[in-house]
Image (cartoon, rainbow, N blue to C red; front, side, top):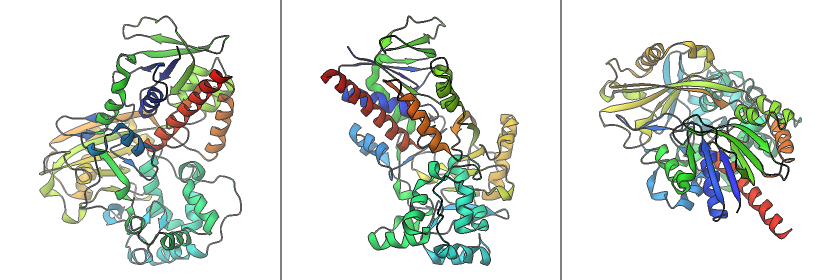
Length: 477
């Protein structure tokens, strides 16, 4: 009987368990999770409103997560963002201004909004338009997001638009964030077309009916979906088929490889007892890279060192429920971001109730205020009350509400967001080579090939495909 162990019940671990059950229905698949719930850094709280403490949706442009939903037959339980206020805003001189239509992440697809935006000076706007004539970089080595954006779009556009957008998504410092790892699509655009603007015009000719990129204000909101009942609901649906082989509050403290190539785990039960080790034919570690390093250090120190070299940032999210009638009319949007040069306390503010229906009563606006990350790590030294006070001030300053919020909640995520430093893709390639020396071992999660939910699902699916292929070769060997 084939036995497979998965360590970690976040998105990657749950997706791999689901795919394994479908591909190997007769195998024994056990999933170990040290906490008392599934989901990892994805968590929905339902009191008093539907509050997402982590990711509140995922994109369908990378199709893997949405395909998993379809494979599960759950499409009807997902919703798309509301049509109203489908814009993002950026802070300039303490005020909110809409990100120009057609500016998606770092690509301008419409020139008119760029020429008229008050976010940039006239000189900054003209420099963005000159991007079409900036020569493409000849070197193929990795570079930082800052280096790429300044080279192509100019310093002002980087500081006022690209940096806060990137910081809001990756909670990372743009001067160290890898283009190859975080935004390879733009590297490819420069290589294929010589310019981001020229790439946008070429795509318009190829797909004349495609309007989403040209209408985007910071992000292409038409390509996002969310479960009606919250992200935790979906992940619990993923976990349901595992049944009693989902071992919550079971902490894996050690990994060993037997002489015949099987895997053994040291597992502590909720009562603190040590389980007798079982032998597994395959092992998937769906963990932060630093946790995987702890488990693999005795087995392969060099692999552990490479895993440890991927840093992680911490963050905090303040959740506030504020009165709708106190928000300035021109402040309604899906969210706002703050450039580092504005010296704000918060990185971004998401208006959850404006993005998706059913999150709270209509007289309330549910806001999530993001703080810390690699951009402002020092702010996390403050206690929860101080962070909530900062969040209230930020919301009042930018959006207007002055009454005491009806809901106040603090969420902290310690070492939760991997930082893709320049050279990350080369490091991951080395890690993959080292792992390949141990058949049946797979490392998955957001520390490798993408921090988003679709990338995690894709990584889990590919790992399962490799495991299944190995078993098939062994059976026919």
